[in-house]
Structure formats: C-alpha cells, structure tokens
Figure (cartoon, helix red, strand yellow):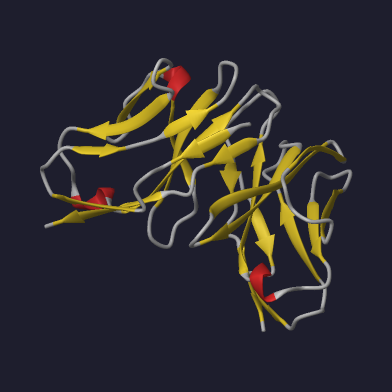
Amino acid sequence: KAGVTQTPRYLIKTRGQQVTLSCSPISGHRSVSWYQQTPGQGLQFLFEYFSETQRNKGNFPGRFSGRQFSNSRSEMNVSTLELGDSALYLCASRAPSSDTQYFGPGTRLTVL
Amino acid sequence: AQRVTQPEKLLSVFKGAPVELKCNYSYSGSPELFWYVQYSRQRLQLLLRHISRESIKGFTADLNKGETSFHLKKPFAQEEDSAMYYCALSGHRDDKIIFGKGTRLHILP
C-alpha cells in the first residue's frame, strides 16, 4: 500500500496570504489528523476528520481550518498567515478501529 | 485536561549504556499510551504502545498509573537509536492523539 502523501512538500508565503495544504491518506483509512510541528512546541494537534466530518479539534485560532472529501483526502487551509505559522505541517491517517497513526512526510511552510 | 510531558529536550547516552526517556501524562481516565520515533530524514512512526506490552528494537515501556508515567527504556543503547522520540496519549479509540514535545536521543560512540 502507498503511504500517506502530502503536497506540496515545501511552500514559501508572505504574511497576510493564505495557503492550502493537501493530504492523501492510506487507502482504506477514513481518519485524517493534522499536526503542526515546530522545534519549540513539538507536535501540536490541529484537527481530525473522519468520514468528511471534523471529529476532534485542537486549540488553534479560526484561521486554521480543514475539510475532508468523500475519497478521504483532506485539505488544510491557513488564512492571513503570520510569521509564527512557519512550521512543518504533518498529516496522519489511521485505519477504522485502530489507534496507530501513519504519518506523511510533511509540508514545510515558511512565512516571510 | 489531557497533557503529555517529556521533561528532557535532549538526552545524550554512551553506546552500550542504559537509556530511559521519561514521559508523564495527565488524564482523568484510562488512557492509551504510545511512543513514536522519528529517525533522521524519515517519517514519524509508531515504536510501541502500552496495550501490546511488546519490546520493539529492544525498547520497552511500562505504564505506571500511580505515577502517571510511561517511561521508555532500553538496557543497552545502540548508535542507530539516535532519533527524536515522542510520547503520545489518547483517551479512547476515537479520541485525538496528543503528543509531548519530544526528546532528542543522541547516542555517543
């Protein structure tokens, strides 16, 4: 099976812009979670989608949003980018009735 | 509130010496606990979980509910163990999975 894929792998934006990141889970996985990874804060949970519905949410401002499509692919959107949004954004999927997360390679976002 | 604390950002250990990566958690019920590892230039991946009580790559972790800890141990460190280690917690099967800030393990030759 192909692993979790994320596009793009690298992104450079300027303050105030918005960005959309994409994640394709492992085939058959219906749950997709998003994390922000930074050296200072480690992995911080953003949100999880299951069957096109947001199932869990972390403590991030409303500028961070997501959605999931019927084929389980997920997108994450960040509006009005700030310098502090520079991070590696990781997506993870898990199989039904499983608690093991399978991670993608991440999208490195740099905000200038 | 759910919280995972890894008190050490960096741990340096000589090859052949024992390793212990600390993890403490805060959760009001009975959590599921995990250790994830990220080797250089590789994806974050599951190392082990407490429910399976297994040893992976020589690592074990025991859940101590009294001390709310889930420390990761290995009796003899190997150079290939150098990596970033994350402790994680989940309340139940469909709950979000919360990670600690991670500990970088550096094995000295």
